[in-house]
Length: 324
Image (cartoon, rainbow, N blue to C red; front, side, top):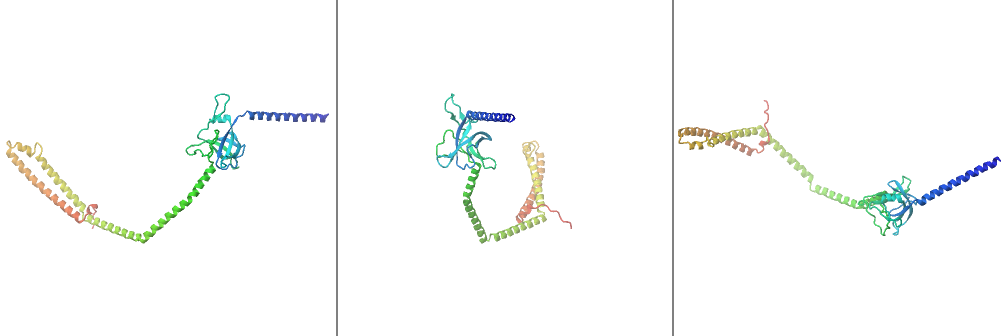
């Protein structure tokens, strides 16, 4: 009696477990049937090693579908990848245009900047299909030798593909770079040989020695000018000339104006004697001014003769006389 009761409980528990599993499978299957998906195609001009049917399709990290099939494209060069994308997800992304009524085909609308790209999942080597927005100028549409379907999303080269293409272009340009470097080295060698044949180094040394001699002579001339105190003499001469010009200007002012000699001449009938005395005094002062002006001109002549003998005397300043 005791053993029969235990068998009954065990059998009941197994039946309840099978019923729960069956109900879960039915619910999951119904959910999968109700989930609406659309197929999109993309074509890769590279290896898709690591991408398998069932691999996720993500938009900026968010899973929106799975890879359905992977086949060879009609040109036998590209790889055709079909992806089943969730209808609600692609509708939010703007990849479809809803039909006008309940029935009717769905119109596909792919943005011009949308691209698919192969990306790796960590270091496992497994890959997934990534959707993202790219700049159409930097990532133009790939050229396909066959007409793509309406539900076609262009592909962008993966990071490894871009790196491989860059390395290949660099490797192709290495022979050209090596030839240019060799040509430049030949030119440098030819220039060095020409300089050696022309003894440019010795000529440069001689030129520098000549420059040193000119600098030494210029320094000696400046020292002689400083010893002769020519700058001081020239300054004194200019001071005297300025004083003479000032006196001459004062004399000329006496001839001009209402109180000058011209105005006095108009009044000559009234004060002829006084004008004569004034003219006599003005003439004496004019003689003194002209004498000073002649002295200034003589000093300027001496200065010009000194400059003719020593053209660099004005380049030096006044030196302090050494104590005996």
